[in-house]
Structure formats: structure tokens, C-alpha cells
Length: 103
Ligand code: FES
Image 1 (tube, rainbow, N blue to C red):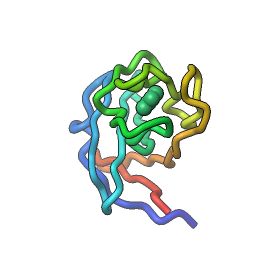
Image 2 (cartoon, protein in one colour):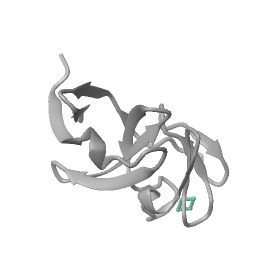
Image 3 (tube, rainbow, N blue to C red):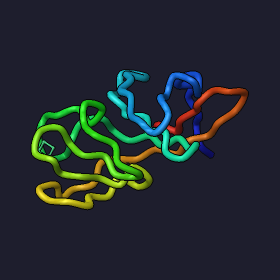
Image 4 (cartoon, protein in one colour):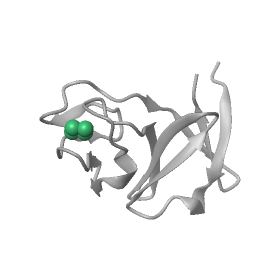
């Protein structure tokens, strides 16, 4: 059973863009791609950079520091120099709010 945390109003996540949020003490990145919301850890696995300061292109987030890329749907690395996935989180939308399973 997933434990859902009420993270934010859907409207707080900018369309086809990324926003950083600290929720339950975790630094997270929320993405809106083609009307769907995704959530991952916000800190790059390659260095100490916040992905919310990077560039979102479709389902790929580009790290602002060395331009490594991750797929926001599953956190998998898609471009060097990143080799390690970031964690991604299940998302549920209800009543205009974003809920995340953070456990
Ligand atoms: Fe993200 Fe280097 S810190 S690619």
C-alpha cells in the first residue's frame, strides 16, 4: 500500500517545465509534460546540482552543471556524464492536487 503525501496544487507545477519543492524534508523536482505530472529527486547523482535549475526538454531533464540528462518518467540516465539513476516517485492527481508516494 502506497502512502500518499499531499505535495502541492497541480497549478503550482508550470506547464512543460520543472519546479523544485521541499516536501517532508526531501528536495524534489516536479515536472509537467504534456499534461502529466512526474516527480523525482531534485539533486543530480553526478554532483551537487539541483535539477529544477536545469532545462526540461520533453521527458528529459538536463542538469545545469554538466548537462547530463535523466528521463523524468523513471529517473534513468539518458546522457553522459550521469550514469546513476535519480529516484522517481509515483504520482496521483486528485481534487486538483498532486499526491506523491515518497516511501
Ligand atoms: Fe549533474 Fe554533473 S552534476 S551532470
